Amino acid sequence: MNITAKIICSFVFLSFVALYPLTIHAEELYVWVDENGATHVTDRPPKKPAKIIGREAYKPTSPEEIQQYQDEQRYREEYSEAQHKRNQEIAEADREKEKYKKQQAKKNEKRAIARKKAEQARIEDLEAEKKRLRAIENKNYREARRIRIEKEKRQIERAINDIDD
Image (cartoon, rainbow, N blue to C red; front, side):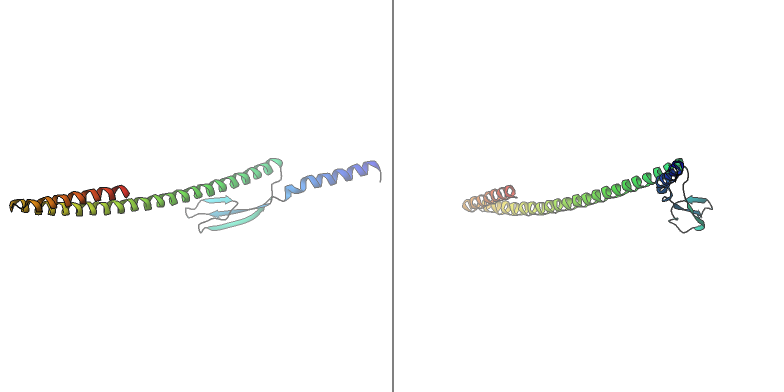
């Protein structure tokens, strides 16, 4: 084999090796009509039921088409990643919202219990005050003093319990 034949064979071989990866990027195109009668040409089948007119393999041939195809693929991947990330953020926000709602429900429950205890304490104090006033009317001052002291003890106990809670 002479030198020109070797050079030509080497050139053909190197050209084949360099251009072979470009043929791998074949993709199917879908031509379909939506419910409004509009015709679409996409690389993915329609999500909603539609009349598919045709499906054919598309192979980019020029370097510009190949670059455009690669850019579109990269854009789709980035878009898909962004959607996935957004969905995760929404799910996390929903979890935080549920957690907050549970905390608020617990706080509201505690407040309701505290209100009920306060109402009960007020009722007890009013009844004790009635008894004390009756004792004063009957001139039973020892009984009135004992009732007042018991009332003060209950108030102190409540204050201590409120501090502990």
